[in-house]
Image (cartoon, rainbow, N blue to C red; front, side):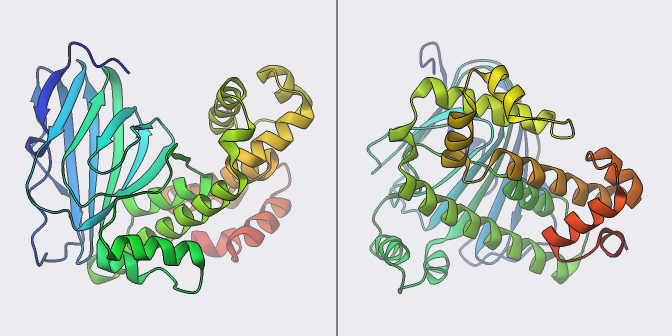
Amino acid sequence: MNRSNCITVDYTRILPPAWPVSPVAETEFVAHTPIDTEWGRLALQDLVLPEIHLVKFEGHVSQNLHLQQRESWESTTVDTCIFLEGSIESDFAGLQKRLRMDKGQHNFVYKPEVNQDHYMDAQDSIDILHLSIDRLYYSQLLCDKERWQANLKEKLLNKQPVSGSLDNMQMTPKMFGVVHDILNCSLSGNLRKIVIEAKVLELVALQLDQLVKRDQASTDQKINSKDQDAFYALRDFLHQRFTDDHSLRTLSKAFGLNEFKLKKGFKEIFGTTVFDYLHDLKMEHARRLLQDAGAYVNEVSSQVGYKNPNHFSTAFKRKFGINPTQYRN
């Protein structure tokens, strides 16, 4: 990432108002006055729950940007960042390794010192969901009986800097679905608050589960950078063309990987097979069509590549525990 010719901006100037000590729970995202400057444009929305603060950043950066924060107060939150569009490099006080995040990646950090630097190249679009979860509340979610959770809990309680992964993690179709549900919850009032908090906790659970599986596999030590790029390109292709018919042979040829390497490497990086990943993409898309667009089951079945609606209904019920007709109602 280019760090020359950067415009340096105080990070606090683009953030929503500070999270109060005793926040009053909101149930809707609050839109703030858009930031429109020489370096770009940002639209911000945030939602405050008693233990959770959600911030949505959306816009573009027209010049190389350095976001800098220098504060004397102590951070009290575990921060998760989800990049739906764009990329960034970050230096956090207390963490030795610089973190880079690209589209479709997520990570979390806890850093007692607030000081941080973020670098962004000029880019057409950025779309970020940022979650701040109270450190003590987050610690209570962790189990003392599982060693990795106990270790993470001990670090948080002792105010030691933590990074979920030093190389970031890839969003899964299920994670994308949870983010969609958070941003598009149709309920109101206290019921909306319950659902959003539950979805945030689901996202934390999925994130921690992926972290453990990734660490166990030591994926980055097994797959060279060229092949990793091919797998990420394949993942992006599947997101764009998940309704098409695919075979290991055609995918292997298109991305320069033999079939054995494709099957083995994809599962090591993304924790699932190519076709299970495709299946999850189809089911999550179908769920959104039924939930948000009110589409009919036959229409959805066709749009996600099923010729037989009954086969689609069976697959949908196996995935979500309810048939699509009931889900639509």
